[in-house]
Length: 143
Length: 111
View 1 (cartoon, each protein chain N blue to C red):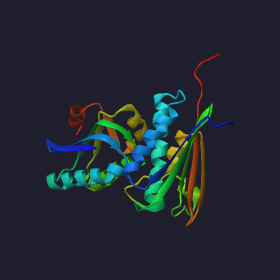
View 2: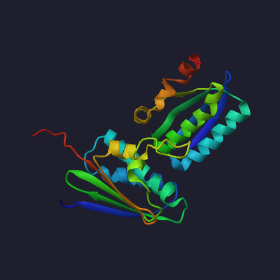
View 3: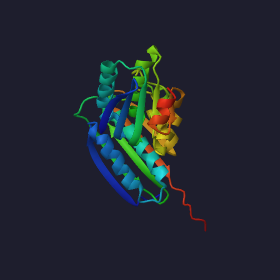
View 4: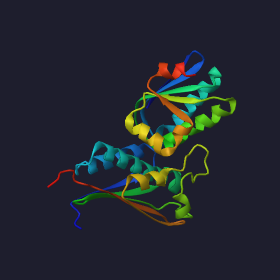
């Protein structure tokens, strides 16, 4: 399917940028007539993916996260790539409550999965992680 | 983010404004922990009227405060929660340990 619009950002791995990324993602999604509720869901999913890259992939402010947003007729797609640590066991990381830190709930991937229609994670230890996710747009207009 | 704390009837009330994500989680933790320690309180009311967004980092820092006060029998009561934030609470299972009340006075009555 043809990409109708694309925005790419390079994001420094700073916590300040998590908010900037999700606001941008929401503005990009607003090109399709998503409901406010769906836009909120996208914001949470993006926040989780970018936070993971900042906290887990890099853990220092000098990393770069590549963030690509693609708009299609019927969906919006987000691709988040880091060249950080990588995930040892993706299936384990996708489980609820997978976190070694008592202050964290381990719900990052759970939220990405519940709020988006597609979620793919590619990761290699020592090389980095790519998270691809998409939300489908269902037109509410009956013809 | 803006956080203010006040002590009323022996209960610590924390009012938060902004987006509760990883960027503000540390500040939230420090302010609330300092207030818990300096007032020596058991229970905490969290007024989230001004919170328009929360993600798992925000949930984590609330859970962390619960783990801190719970050994002494303390509870966290959330009030004035916006619908999109309430939905995240519900999905996360956090409502098992933290109840939502309409207003601060409702929450105070239930303590």
